[in-house]
Image 1: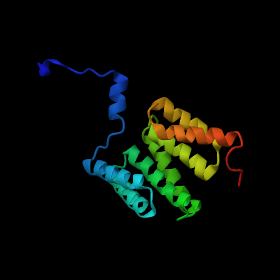
Image 2: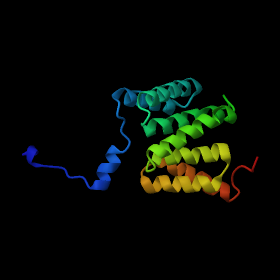
Image 3: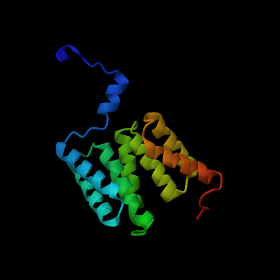
Image 4: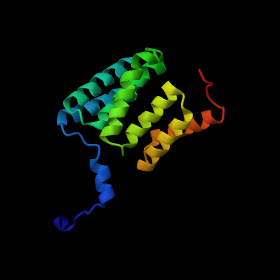
Length: 163
């Protein structure tokens, strides 16, 4: 009976399920290990996360999610005060640019872009544009909503002043 049931995915659903997969299983494993450490959100684990994401991008240079996650992990250091923005800015921005180039339809990459615009550039209009694009691509990606709210609040004068 079960073999008679066949699941047919709409083209959009199938694209969404397969768009961010790694071509290399070791890259995927490193990516998942990096996510684990990034979620712990402390200096030691952020350093481990960066190592895992770098390993994932070395094993599969076309793995956009790993590039985006690398940028997210790098942004922990200036936020926590463990490194200056100038120390990580270039690598994080390059990783985001590559992630967007590899997959312009990645909600994660657009959210990383929103984060960089918030933390590095203080470009609150840009934060909103990137966050809205991420939400259009994946309305369930909650981190994008965080940056959408951050951009909105700062636009209304509720956040930082310019440097």
